[in-house]
Length: 113
Picture 1 (cartoon, one colour):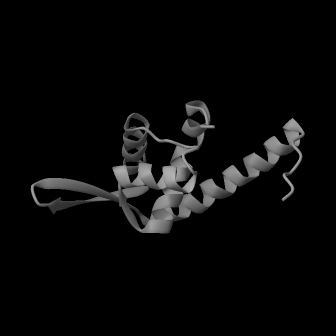
Picture 2 (cartoon, rainbow, N blue to C red):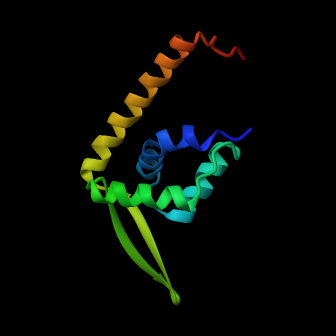
């Protein structure tokens, strides 16, 4: 089962920030593949949603970019700025609190292993 684009859209900035925090620097396609891998294909990020998110994070000063030339190709790497590192902690904490609230609100019983 894949999660709806509506759910992913609301968490995409947090996902990208956390991935960059964990991996130092990444390029766009690498981000999409890492998310697919880590979620066992449950979350698939499209270029149409990823790049506007990366550009917004860059505009907000949370992400910096670096261009590398690989043969004749250009690869744009994204990494967290100091403000981005602080914002990542804030966004992850906010999302965790939101998930706890939703579990309570919807009366969801925790899964037992």
